[in-house]
Length: 161
Image (cartoon, rainbow, N blue to C red; front, side, top):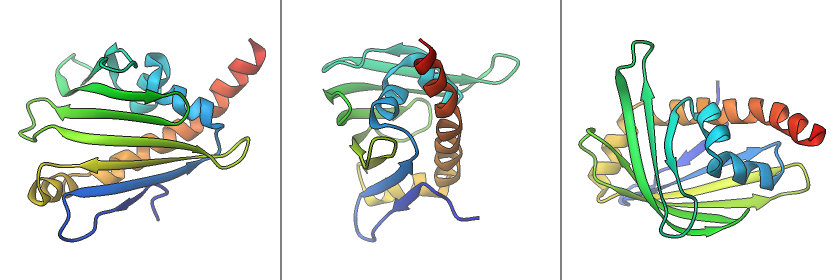
């Protein structure tokens, strides 16, 4: 099955590009990346901190059923333009990978369809290669599929409010 989230990693570079089109208005796609309640649902993680302002920060944590932490990440928000752009750092804690720089762009394709484009810059091409050896593409695609599925529920809730 072809992944709907497209990842392009050109040889000889230390960055990659991620693109996904959603049947979601751009405002809701942006909220899904900035509101802790929505983010935790589609990412399947606990949002411990989310300050979506310039110079703000965030921290996520995923645990198993017994409460053992499986994954932690944190970062700093450098730029926020509502419904258009987020620039942030991202660090996987205790994973041995250095901090990466992420540029997220949100584009309205029409009133009900939007696109997320991410550029992720790694410290080196070698680090990018290590990340791509993990089930990165599959995991990101699964999370984006959950975002798409949950968006209908969120949209219905917003319309009733």
